[in-house]
Length: 159
Ligand code: HEM
Image (tube, rainbow, N blue to C red; front, side, top):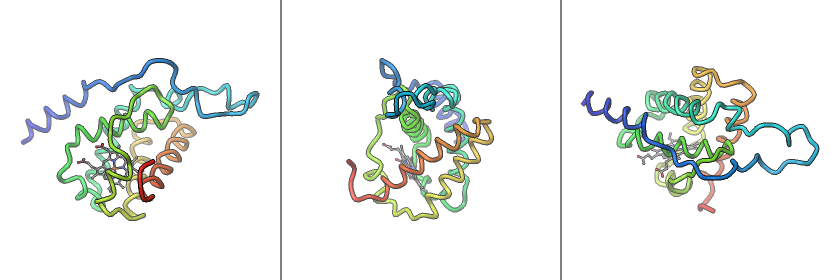
């Protein structure tokens, strides 16, 4: 069993994230001439894929050991879940990745999540960002964007 989970972690460590061509969607629409328009993308400020991968590792470690929510993940293929989460946050941060997972509503609809669960998920993210030393302003921004995804989980269909 231990050997099996070791293999899964190794697989996760080498599995490539699909990086799409061209520029990362050069930030969200920002006003010309504002200081934000010349700022690097959140993806870059977070440290790119090399920094997001250990972040996702720590984050999933947090949520799968959190007694309030860990049972949700009992049947999950954690290696695959990490890859999907990595793609998702890469895209959320305006990075050049392709999210290949299902819609947020479809995935979570059967799970019956409440606000407490979503909060614990974010608490796990905060702990992980602290542990891998994400710069505070970038961390706050990523948290905000992940929180917005929670709203998609709550709506009645995927757009
Ligand atoms: C804003 C918060 C969240 C985000 C961004 C998020 C993101 C994701 C993503 C990208 C996937 C993979 C989709 C796929 O397999 O195609 C997923 C699956 C899943 N998520 Fe979430 N999620 C969030 C909140 C939560 C919470 C709060 C829980 C439970 C406490 C949860 C439990 C799960 C489970 C159990 C799966 C399915 C894993 C499997 O297929 O075995 N998620 N989530």
